[in-house]
Image (cartoon, rainbow, N blue to C red; front, side):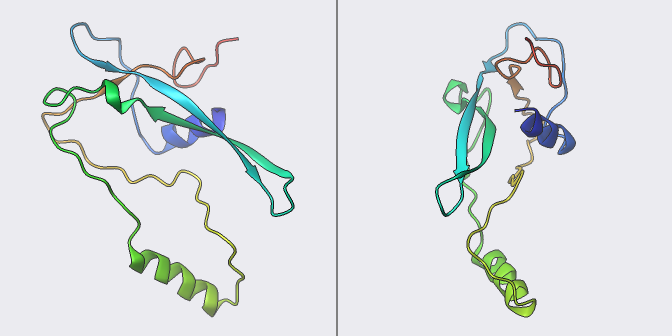
Length: 125
């Protein structure tokens, strides 16, 4: 969880502000994955912080939706580099692979601190 928060902070995903009154606060949750090797043994544990988007209100928290996808040209570029360098490819896995959309000037989204954390860097024990 700390690695995920560090990645998000380094990407400038948010800034901590006092909790405003009379605005919708989007809740968040942790999603946990166990990444396994081909032989079934555990390679690593992964945590992903996600906003619970269903708590957003149209016209207040957002004004339009967009679903970004990986472009085929990006995959072709990676495969071309691998072929050029004679790399073996089994799968793609990116740390902090985010497609960040820019908010419009009139859009501000407030999200509560992640469960288990009082702010963006300190864990509550």
